[in-house]
Image (tube, helix red, strand yellow):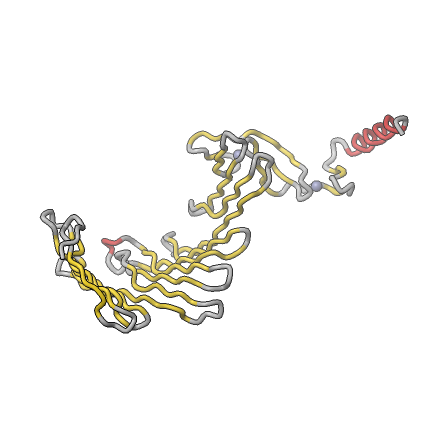
Length: 258
Ligand SMILES: [Zn+2]
Ligand SMILES: [Zn+2]
């Protein structure tokens, strides 16, 4: 058998040199095709153009000038001392929409990507997050009515569990939670907490009520401390049937006083 090795090597060299200079090479499967270097490839230290067969072309080191951002491939590269690394790819709006974490052997261990929709003024409108291609969560942004609160605000978040159940959170433009809804795997509501707020003339929350499945479960009353910061001084907890279960009073430091 040993005698055959030089011949095999010779044949391989012949085969490789026959294709040398052209973009036509045997890939790992032994198939010969014209390489098409159409997509960016990368590892912790280099970027290159990649053929779908894995062949690399135009290999060059990342030119990270600042903040681990490579000007050439347009990726953020975070390399750890143990050889693992993370690649983050920003979209045209500057938001990271793809993150891939690799171990020290270039094996993909975490693949996160997001799909964004934007308003005409480039503010985010909608975002879906996926891990390994599986939808994890969605965020919806609405336009603020009061420009003081910004252009858009996070109005709804949905978290998807593996079993098909969902947690849905809604907010107002002051970041106050409006509702927290849990659904089961067929979309039926299991529990729903609805938050209502009362504000004073200056917009400070003075009274908050949480209702669970339509029945009040918690009430909190707020008042200002010596510095004008509002704190909950009175809390009322209700039973599942809406009877008062317990009631507490607090000082400005959060100590129970009765
Ligand atoms: Zn190829
Ligand atoms: Zn690069």
